[in-house]
Image (cartoon, rainbow, N blue to C red; front, side, top):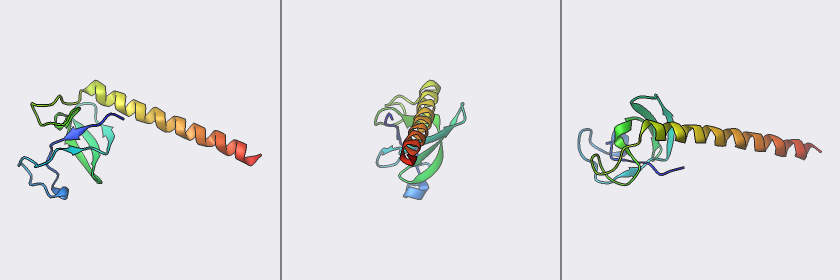
Length: 100
């Protein structure tokens, strides 16, 4: 999966709301997207709903790095979904052969 970065302050990680965070963070996983504005992400073990404009495709801050587009987010989630389906299918096939 493509690396996604954020400069959104996460108080659970010691950031102060409304202040610039000292280090850009990499998101661990994109969990869901409402199709418009909010994205549910895992950042260093914290599940947080963040506005799409605070998620970037390159390390940087707002105005420095391009934000994720709706199309990019939808493609990432479809790819994740298909990967999960393929993994489930693979596990089922392996289990069929283990029975014999």
